[in-house]
Length: 188
Image (cartoon, rainbow, N blue to C red; front, side, top):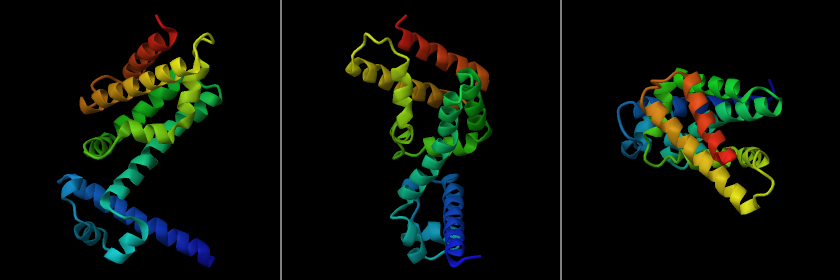
């Protein structure tokens, strides 16, 4: 194994230890109460190692959340671009969220975490996709406003679904989201 591959593997392992330790600590306390010392102790690393990769525990939760959003949302965008059915794609992502509900609720329960902001940064193609499906007679400002409205509304519906312990099936929630988004985009 080359030295570079070994170093990359070591970084991945260290970050994985930190991620797991933070998620374990979040089960019993809010991120505001978790110290770097405590996080390092649970991860089995020293503070210098931690600071080689992160500035704070908030950087860690934001990285975990970003990876989670990317693993779900990018899949939908790629599948849609490949011509797959939107209902099927969205249901698949919602099933993933439901299967990882404990983690999802941990991330949503953090005061500093902005799900909409993370989605906006992680999904620049979302706006393009919504704007492409809007009537051509709308100007760009109107299209951007509708795209933001759909995005924030969808995130709100998702948060409510998650916090209700996914009472509806992923298929039912996907149908509701698509119905509301379709009504907004179609103007009916």
